[in-house]
Image (tube, rainbow, N blue to C red; front, side, top):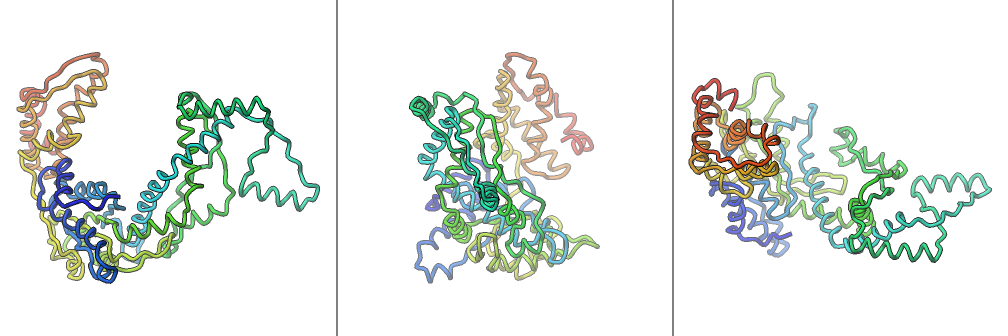
Length: 464
């Protein structure tokens, strides 16, 4: 996990996906670099240096969430996005605020597990190929002898339910040679497209939402009950390539130590976790409607977690002192000063994101990796339709998006999705019947499809 990355490199990475908002990018890049710097200090000093949490202020669709999400991908840190409105004050029905930290730990588990599985992959692949060779060249099954003592029979049945034994088999020289030949072919990938029926562990299913009281103690009732049930095997008919991946996952889990994964994940979440709290403005007292559950209570519940407290998870306790919190909100109906003073003080870095201009929309359509225009060109390319957008057409789309945002509701860059979908609706509908074609989207084409809708405020409100 690369955390030794300079602020300039972070901003450069973010520039590939997000247009403008340089002040916000700079702030988050510095906050991330400071976390790396903290880890280089001596242990006593490390404890004293706390992260400088960030409050992003700006309308919807300007890139607040995208900045935080891309940030976590760049450094491969545990990341969780939550909506402040999903939480309710203690005593009301809804998620308790500590669940955001438990979700963060779950993401950290996935990151560490992936890393550990990667280390044992070669070994796990060999074991998976051996298992496949056994399935493709079965041995001669021996009959299992039952004990005469009823108590022994009962214990044997119980043990088999908990940990099913592989049926013992007899191997002839011919079977051994065939298996070795198949194993070598599997190693070379010669049989990848062949179908095979294998037995794999039944996947864990997520049960109903846990009892809120148990969740707050870090106990997963579904998992506890699941551990008491016997392990079930299910049969699946898949290609050899898919079967190998399924068996590699099973074998990898046997080769790694779960306790090591859990302790490493807790350490990673504590030192590198990022929690993005969206819609923080909706829990301020000014945005509250009469008759609603007290939103200020939610702020007071969030406060100890942001200040630094211990949260119980099913993998052990976790300290939140060094988790980076990024909060964001549009603050249309309220101001950051409407949040309770203690919470305001925990977000010392304030960043205001700018409204998007028509020029920004042009850049969003053309410049980022996998920009919207590139996506539609690729989608229609799958039907052998070669689409080209002229610069004038892109500028006109951007102009319409800006105009509709100004005259109706400002939903930022999301307006471009709606406009492009409407613009290309007929083409997307007809493409599968057109065989091969070359189509150029010009300014005249854009005007023909959209100008009338954009001019009429009522139409654009409902259609765009």
